[in-house]
Structures are given as structure tokens and as C-alpha cells.
Length: 237
Length: 254
Image 1 (cartoon, each protein chain N blue to C red):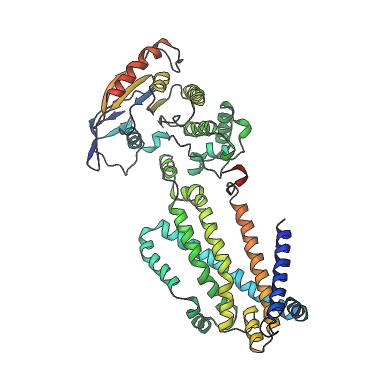
Image 2 (tube, chains in turn red, brown):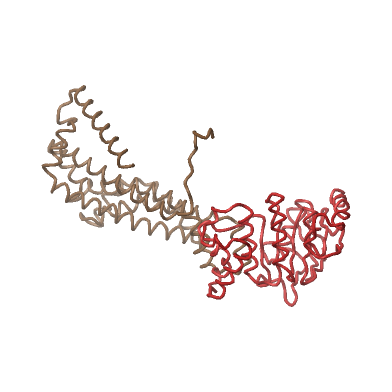
């Protein structure tokens, strides 16, 4: 993927000739303070035409096209009037592509996430962590080459967050994931590559690849070494 | 449970009514007591029932057509901002003109039969439904629309699975208002020009100084309106199965 992007919004330059290359098949974490434009970047990559920018965003092999991305946000965005299994199948339903094999896939995903018993329940019966799990499954159901995740676990408590991070790491193995987060610990646990985005206009302040395979334990030496350094880099901006 | 409460309300109201009559000593041609009205109800039951059927039909038909029209308008305005710019002013003007002023014209155009009364009811019902549904449609959560966009959803898919269901609670609020005022349309239409219905009956009973008959008709009308309102309320609650209406719970100190 290639960016070479400029974006202005209401007089402030958010991105100025920003160029990024994201490697396929790996989880790239974009780490940065709130408001630096990380969410906007994801929306641009997902093909939101209402954001006008100069430059180009390309997902190999073609231009940035919604067909190639799946998106998930901090808000689980589950439809309260649909059961869990219908919510997982939302993309398929919206495109009118429902088939029995896809239904089975949805049911399997729910089982894998430990929510098989709640297949027919409404989202209101679930806790926040369970709902975000369903949102994750919905995103995976899309079967798109690029997964865009916008601070997906930041609204959850610490324990639930760790469980979801494990689940996400397990289910997204081998896929191209772009995970936006403001939590350095999350980036260290999940990222195959970490890009620190900060400043106005936002630029890549630091970029490195932590050793070891994700998900890394919080007690891992790599995590405990890099965490204070990352924190310092973030605070400096 | 609710029947029990209604029964108590009815009994209490009747008691107050009788007290009022006894204390003020009002003559039977000004304020008849519950006794005479009950008699009138029983004596004229078959006539009253026929008129009741006609009025109820007018109300229900007006509700059906008004709701359909209102929803179509709302959807059209939502899907076409261009049309909306033309339709919204017309919609508002339709409400600024008092329905009572239009009643004679409607009778002129649609005749003495049920059609003019139904048209009246439609005029009263149509705006609350259209307005609340339209604004409900507009208040769909933006992130949901963003998600649908990333999923390559078409307009029909988005409307059917996301926008319309999310607007139904707002629509229900508008419909409840419409149901409560629908009888006004039917009755006013009957006053202006008709040959049947409870409004017609009330007018003529009044002219003949048969006030007890008039009150009997009024009682029937009230019961009918209440029944229609609670039936529709019940259906709406079933329709919005995913929400449990909240109330401030004083027992919890909230």
C-alpha cells in the first residue's frame, strides 16, 4: 500500500505529503495521541469520498477501493434489532449475498469466540466486551484483504481488553491489519510493526518492528523495554 | 391489570359526575347524570351502535391512509433532498390552515358520505406521522452509515436493514399523537355535512334537546377512541421489540 497524502481540514493541515508503506500479511499498529488524524487516515484508506485529499492511496493491486477493506471502530455498531448471528452476517445481508455456507461460517465464528449460546440473542443482552467480540467477528466475516481497526478495544476494561487482543491476534493471523490505537501497550502486544504518528501536521515520528511474535505477553522483556521508550516518544509530541 | 385500573377510573369518574349533578342541581337538559345517560345508551343502543360503526370506520380508514401517506412522504423527502425542498413547505402549510375551515370544502368535493370524513382524518393524521418519521430517518447514527458504506451496501439494503428500523421509534411517537387526534377529523367532518356517524347523531340530539342521548354518544366515542389508542399502542410496542421503555425508578433512589 502506498500513501503520498496531503489533507487540510478547516485551515489546519492534518497531513502534509505523508507517505506510508504498509506491509501485507502483518499487523501494523499506528500509535498516536488523540486527535492527530489517525481515525481520518483509516477512513481515507477505507475509501470515504467525502474526505478530499491530495495524493493517492493505493491498495495493491488497485486504487483504494472499498471492496478491499473491512472496518471496525470503538463503537461496536451492532444493530439492536438483529440477533447476534444476523449482526455477524450484516455485510452479507446488506449485499444480499446470504447463503447457507456463509451462515455456517458465521455460526462457526460465534462458536470460536465463545458466543455460540447467544446466537439468537439480541445485542442488549450482552456486555460491552461480548459486543465488541461480535463486532470483530462481523469484520472478519467480510473476508477482505485489509482490516482497518480504529481503537477497537479502547472502550473496554483492562482485563476484557487483553482477552479481546488475544482473540483478535488469533483470528487475524496472516491478514493485513491496520490497527489504530493510543495505547502503547496494545501496540507492543499486537504489532508486527509500530508507527508512531504525531504532531501537526502528523508525521511518522518513529517506526520499528518489535521482536517476537504477537500476541506478546505483557511480561515479555521486549514489551517492558520498549514501553517506557514509546511513552516518552508520545509525550514529547 | 390495565382493565382493572380503567374500571376504577371509570367508577371514580362516574361518582364525581353524579356528585357534580347532585350538588349543582343541574337540569337534565344541561348536564344529565350518569343514570339518565345510561338509560339513553341502553334504549338507543342499536341506533348508536350503527353510528358508532360508521365513525370508527372513518377513523381507522383515515389512520391507515394517513399513515401510509405520511410514511411515503417522509421516505421521499429523505431519499431526495431535491424533492424535500419543495415538499416540506407544502407540508407545513397544510397544517397552518385549520382543518375546520377546510371541512365544508371537503364535503363539497367528496360528498356527504364517509369519504369526506376520511379525508378530514387523513389531513390531521398525516403531518405528525410524516414529520416524526422523517426526522427519525435523518437521525440514523452516522457511524452505522459509514460501516454500511465500507461494506458496499446499496441504498435499498441500507434503508431496509439500518435506516428504517432505527427510525421506527420516532415514527411510533408521531403515530401515537396522530391516533389521539384522529377522531377530531372524523367528528368535525360529520358536523359539517353528513347523514350518519356519532358526530352527526350528537349534533341532532343537541338540536332536539336530547342531551342525555348526546352524552351517550359522547361516552361511546370516548370508549372507542381509548380502545383504538391502546390497541395501536400495544401493536407499536410489539413492533419495537428490541427496546424496553425506561422509567425513572424512585425505589432505587434514582
